[in-house]
Image (tube, rainbow, N blue to C red; front, side):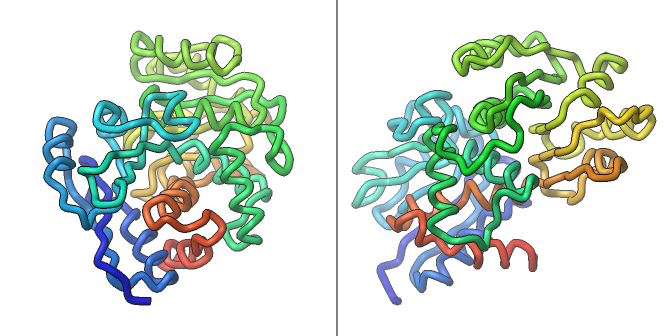
Length: 319
C-alpha cells in the first residue's frame, strides 16, 4: 500500500538506546505504509520548540521521552484523560498539514504500565484478540477501572521507585489496577510534594516516602510491597539490587516488578527480585510495546484494534 511520504520520530536525550523505531517501523511494514519513516532525534528541552516549529507538513507525530514529557506542554493541547490529569505527554500528533495546523498531546504511558503489569499476572497478551486488547488499552487510557477484565492486584500495596514523570504515570496505572496503597522510594524525598498531591487527587492514601539511602527503611519498603515499579534510569537502582541480594527473605517479598529500564536487560534489580521462587520481573520493553500501540494508532489515523501488535511484539522479541 504505497502512500504519501510521512515522517515520525522519537525525541529525547539520551536516545540512541530507544527501541521505539523498531516498534513503529514494524507496525508500518505490517500496515503496508511504505512511505512512512520513523527516526531517533537527540533533543533537549531547550531545543524542542524550535525543532517542532521547523517541521514541514510531512510530519505526523512524535514520541517524547526524557526530558521532554513536561516541556512539550506549552506547545500544544492536552487531548486525553491522562495528559490532562498529569500535564505530561509522551505523544504529540500533528493535524493535517503538519505542525502549523496544531499539536495534540497524549499520555499513553499509563496504559502501557497497566498492560505490562496485567501481562505479568497472565491477564494480557500481545497476541490476544485485537478487539479485546484494544478495549483493555482504551479502558486503561481513560482511567475506567471498572471496565478492565479483572483486578488481579486489587487490594494490594505497591511501591514506586522514583519521582519523575514516569513515576506519576505509574501511580495512575496502579490506581487503575485497584491498588489500595502506593508508597514511594526516592533518591531525594524533599522533591516529592507533587507525588503526594497526585496521590490525593487519585484518592489514594498519602504515600510513605522513604529515602533510598536509608538502608533499613528501603529494605522494608521493598520487601513489604506486592508490586514494585522502578522508574529510575539505567544503573540508578543498582544499589537496591545489592540490598535485595543481602536481605533475609521472610516470604513477604513482592511478587511482581516492572523495571522501566530495558538496557541492560535484565537489570540487576530484576535479577535480585527474581531470586525468590514465583516472583515475576518485567522489563521496560513490555511497557514500551503497549504504550506504542495507541501512538501508532494516533499517528497513522488507524483504529486501535487495527494496530499490528503481534508484529510489533515479534520484532521486539527477535531484537
